[in-house]
Image (tube, rainbow, N blue to C red; front, top):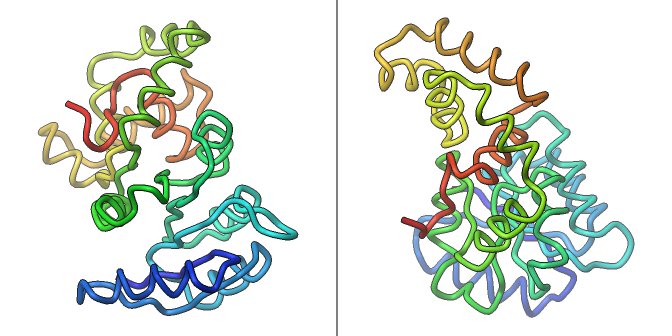
Length: 216
């Protein structure tokens, strides 16, 4: 897996690089110390994953995440930060981040997060998942209402899609053609007012169709 490290502290990048390359499964292909540099290097290097800090001088991690996800690459962004999920989780997900992890548990959870994100899944530790659940309980009627208008086949299709399945793979699971699956997804997006896979992943998490990594 090819990784771009983004953090404005040299010592943090050095530590992460040593940790990742010691696994023998990660190639750190580039580093950046600012959001602006991260966008440029993501465009040039097209890594599998960007490990993104949030608080940096100039362009912050949330804006850089949004810019990278708008490049049209296959690159996924995993946010790795010391900052509280309560303040930064939702903005990061809205910007297109595929995962969110606190640096305090990076030594034990980082490789699992990377592997999940590269497979096309979203990754949220239990505390972040609990925050989304609380937000759903406090302000999620519209999401719940959206959930109810979907047929069972549409719900299955977007759940598989949110988990990273292609239309062909989802069709094999559902015993349906890829074209039929694409139709289910298109109808669900239209009913829910969603535009892309990031929107579907966020909806699936908030509505309970998709559980965060580590949840049962």
